[in-house]
Length: 205
Image 1 (tube, one colour):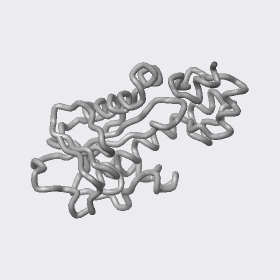
Image 2 (spheres, rainbow, N blue to C red; image 1 turned 90 degrees about the vertical axis):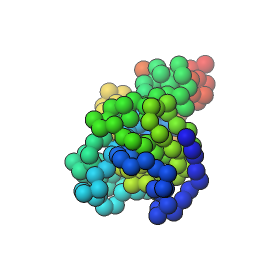
Image 3 (spheres, one colour; image 1 turned 90 degrees about the horizontal axis):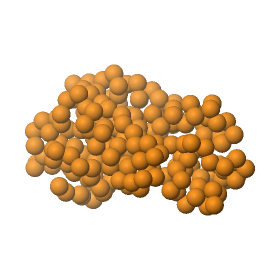
């Protein structure tokens, strides 16, 4: 297993990669104070390319939503998985993120020969895998995974906002904004907050 620094796009597929299906993997929701961490795995179809794939953070919400549907329609297969708040609090956010990534890969209908993961850490897998720093900007399959994970988690935030409107999840998406911290101080934590995260723990204390 290898980790490599950022490479130009033309070097994103190197000679030692085995032939066969390649899955891209990325996550969303490591930083927020509430909700699951979400990971997605995508195997793109070379015969049905998708224009405009990029790091999900660089795209507008409307563009992400449109690409979400296009990825689901055109990819050979894709999978979205979560690690729960309980798992985040029990394992820590890094281990929970790797767990969600593993679940996403295992959820693919087709087994990839190679897995490319955004970042510098790899989940436990039974196939070759490589961590790529800034992979969501370099590797289209990772970009697609970043979009699926981001849209899925944003949709979760909107749903939870309807249940707990006092926290404003639809706006801040769980991040520790001034509004979110003020709501935490006023209302305490709800069942979706990560008690192991310091800002939440301080409010509860």
